[in-house]
Length: 350
Image (cartoon, rainbow, N blue to C red; front, side, top):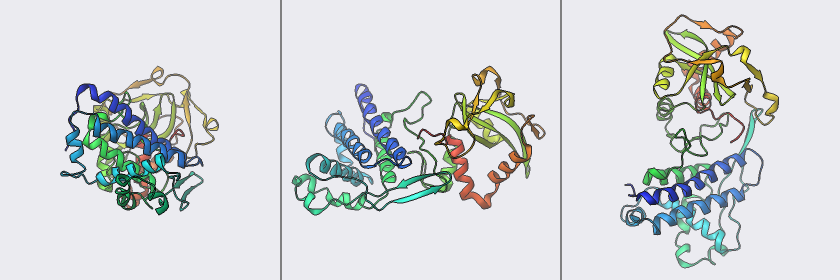
C-alpha cells in the first residue's frame, strides 16, 4: 500500500527524506572514523520522526498513512514507532539516547568500523514520559534495543521508500543521496536500501542496476571456461579507486543502461595519487591527467574478439583477478569484492 501524494507535497517530503538519508550515511561514516556515535543516532531519530509527523499530519492522504499503523498495519510500523519513542525520549527526558558500549570492532589493514547496538532506555526515564509515548516502549524494546544500529536505520529508509516512492532523494544519476555506503571487507550487510538481504537476490539486483562511477576504461579482455570477460578501471570524474571485472554480456547490458565504457591509452594518461588519500586502505588510487573523455573513446558495444591486453598492463595479474571473480567456490568473498567494485563504494568519503 502506498500513500497518494499531491504534486506540491513531494518536494518538501523529499527534502525531509533527504535529511534522513544523509543522517544514515553520516552515522555510517562516523563508525569508520572513530567519532562519537551518539549525535549521529539522535540526528537520525529527529529526521525519522520529522518525516513521520509530516506524513501523519500534513499530507492530504494522511488516512492511508495512518492506516499503516492500525487497520492495515505494515510489517515495519513497529520500527517507526520505536524510533518515535526514542526521539521523544531525547526531546522530553534528561536521558541520552545513544548506542550501547557493547561494540564490535571489525577490520584490520583495510580499515576498521564499529558495529554498535542501541542502548536500553532505563525505567526511570520511561516513567517521566507522557502516557502516549510510554505506550510505544514495547516497540523500542522489540525493534531497536540491543539491535545493530545501521541495519535498523536501513529498515526505516526502506519503509518510507516503499510507502511513498516519489520522496526518495536522488542525485542527477538517479542514485539515492548518501548511498551506497562504504564497503567493509568481510561484511555482507547491505550497502544500499534497495539491496536485497537474500544473497542470490542481491546478485541479481547488483547486475540489474548501473555501476557506480561516471565511466569505465577497458584495458583488456580474457576468456575463462568459454566465458569472455572484460576488465579495467572505474572512474568517478578523474579519479579511479577500483578496478572492474565483468563478463562481456554484463558490460554490454550496462551500456544499454547508458553507462559508458571507453577505450584509450590509460597507461600514459594516469598517475598514482594514493599518497593523497591516507585514509584509503583498499588499493591504489589513480588519477587521469585530464578529463577521461579527452583521451578515451566511448565503446558503443564491447566487441567479440580474441584475448587482448593494453600495453604496459600486467596481463597475468588481471587474469588472476578474473579467475577470482569467476570462482564460485569463493562466492562469499568474491561477492563482497564485486559488490564493492560495482557499486564503486571503495572511495574514502563514506
